[in-house]
Amino acid sequence: MSTDTSAARVVEFDDAGLEIWCDEECFEVTGARIAEYAAATNDPIAAHRAGEVAAPIFGIVPVFEAMMMPVIDVAPMDIFGRVVHGEHDFHFHRAILPGDRLVSRAKAIGYTSRATGTAITLRIDCRTDAGELVNEQYLTAFFRNIDAGKTIGALAPAHKFDATLRAREPIAVVPQHVDDDQTFRYAPAAGDPVPLHLDEQVAEDAGLPGIIAHGLCTMAFASWAVLTEVAGSDVRRLRRFAVRFAELVFPGDDLQTRIWTTGSAGGVTTYAFETVRGEDIVLTDGLAEITD
Image (cartoon, rainbow, N blue to C red; front, side, top):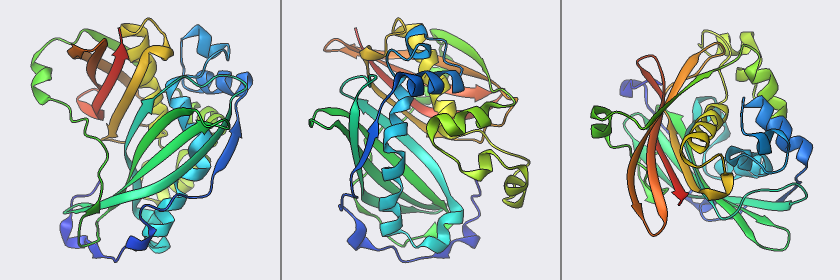
């Protein structure tokens, strides 16, 4: 991600698009789709692979159609070539199960202009068709080298990584490998057909050395690492899972997810984590909250 502030382009965002829920999107969950997503993210947890209960980051699948519409209401279309997925934060109320009929909606709640670009924060709600809240999500869409000139509205909840943790040995280190065909399996399982992940020429035209892995696929890798190491592989115990996407990941990469315990209160233990490729941190500001 470029930090060349001299190239920043001043763009006016439309504040009237804030705090406006988009139209609801409906999604019917099947065991086959749950199993497909687990296989596409190399998830080793048997209940996910069998389609009995959804992995946590599967939560992006029902909301995918809804989540980008509010961004269009705030940011002009001609700068969408500069947008990247900055952060994602899931707050879980219950696990997604086969047979669930889910209804999702999203809204932009604010934006922040920084020296390197402007970040729009979205809030996404996912409920059953009977109205039961399943999860809430906060997504940050970051426009590189775009200056909106101000900060307005609300921010996503904080989940900053404490850098002093790196002086301690992690409680777990989980090795992971991004397969050469990972993006081609993930795209249909997640419903995310963005060509940067599938077309070498498109990726090269965008200035990349080749196709890149989906950020949410890397996040899914981190989620099963945390679940298997500190939650007994039980997704129902996960209450929150958040990351910041720090570096691009490529097919063929070898990764490690490193986990630290940071505290416990009220029957919930909090963990910090990060995913690395050698010396490069590809996921940072990782936070997981798990019931005891």
